[in-house]
Image (cartoon, rainbow, N blue to C red; front, side, top):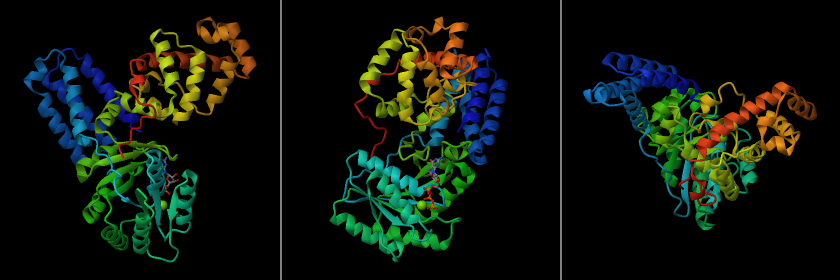
Length: 442
Ligand SMILES: Nc1nc2c(ncn2[C@@H]2O[C@H](COP(=O)(O)OP(=O)(O)OP(=O)(O)O)[C@@H](O)[C@H]2O)c(=O)[nH]1
Ligand SMILES: [Mg+2]
């Protein structure tokens, strides 16, 4: 996601930096390109227009033109304005501080409500909170069963009542949660193909009956401006407290993420980035802006790493990186660690410059097994000093691991790109993170 937009910004910014002297004209030209890039990423037309107007006002000032690095100044203005557009500050979910705190999930069919229910319950569980999932979708066949499967996979109880209406199910669930000291109750409501009165009435009634602490709209980022429209309509009717954008791992162009806050006035609180129950992130406007502008998102990466990487090993790695002694053996260990973190693509996108550095280098998850075989076929000396791997060694390793020399070359290229990135990452302070640090503020 954001891939194309990041590329375009990269090109525009490169020109700005290299322009030497900036004039009103080349600033205007750049902004025209920014405008086009945003529109092509499916950002709302009015939002784009307003954005460009604001940036232009700030950028075409005498102060900027006379500054030492005018190009850099304009990039900073774009960055700041983008953060404003995305909502400025992080809006955490309502704290889980009563028995029960209630999150109600709403949204169109297939937007990801049931999956999100599981994700939120899992996160609550990680915080030692007792969660209850409530099956309020009685319309789609097997919807209750689906939630039960999710609940079972994370060992969270599911509340359901056969033959009852959702309103009744939710009020009964609240009583049950109160009586049994649940900390969090998550209501998984039914979806519809389109917004209709019947659905809205039902949701309104549930809201009135259980008075949720968080009324979240779950919107599919892949649907672009439709996600924005749906959010707006739900907000008008129900008064939602926030939006969770799902499927940001897909090839959505990003327009929804960029426009929702500006169009609806509702904050994006969380983003969902995959089908696995651990694929959930807090939405940080500043970090998202950096990611979109190709500046990476080191903070989220550190947090993600903090969750899954063994801290002691990370400290050792940091030491090695500082000494520039990172070897293929460490690479192998890192691969094992990375595998725990989720799809490589989503991790690479957070590393500044990685999008560019890894261009053309295929990140092929299924290829990991192959890479492991190749490293296993190397001698310890080769793993320590990949530089000594010459033509005949390559052939031997290729034969030993059942690969071609081309594959070995590819691995060495990938390793050297990784080594460069790792050097950048080594500036991060793994050690300052508490064990099991979590990006969630619940
Ligand atoms: N790639 C990706 N897939 C997702 C994400 N969230 C949900 N899905 C998938 O989207 C599909 C629909 O998800 P559900 O959670 O069943 O959606 P729902 O809103 O409960 O759907 P209904 O109950 O039919 O209204 C499933 O195949 C999920 O695995 C996400 O963040 N990324
Ligand atoms: Mg569902």
